[in-house]
Length: 239
Image 1 (cartoon, rainbow, N blue to C red):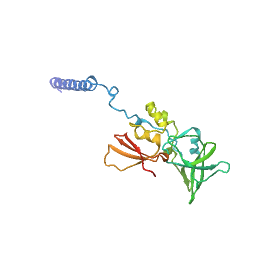
Image 2: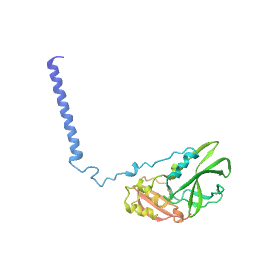
Image 3: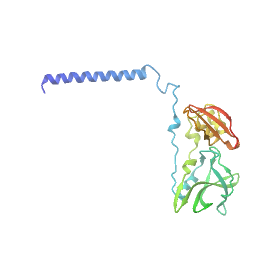
Image 4: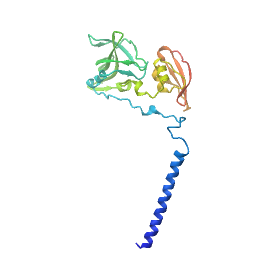
């Protein structure tokens, strides 16, 4: 390569580097020098809920499911899961008699995990989590075992971390309303679930609007969300 050609190539490279540097400086200036940063712009909501990753146990048999006894647990969806009377002395669950429904984000202390016969399915047994309430023992299903194969879905039913800590970025007044099992305008759907339990959505063709009906332990509510936030609260239809 001749000295003259080398010089021309060097000139072209220097010009290209200078242009790239100028473009980079302009981008930084337009993003940071002429306006507020994302953190400074309070009109841009940060979806912190998306970054919450609750711990899971991934139980695969009776022994691993008994990890639930190592810490308190909290119910993810209230008014969805039925619990039954449990005779601790005889280790018998009365699955023919419903005792009630687990409450929204109810704190439980699981004292044991057992199996019980499945009514109508002699080849299958229910995996049951045992807890105490008001001096009485109860149990609710968290899975089943059939032919020695376990299917346990406690991770879908229970948190093993306090939701107050998982979602500590929520305002104090929001948590106060949740703890009172009260819905307020501006709440998001997860916050409402924590406050009043499971809901059944209507079909909707409008992605920005959604109506959900909540049994709410016998005090039904119909809640309309707009852009993911509570916009309207009305008494719901009776069951």
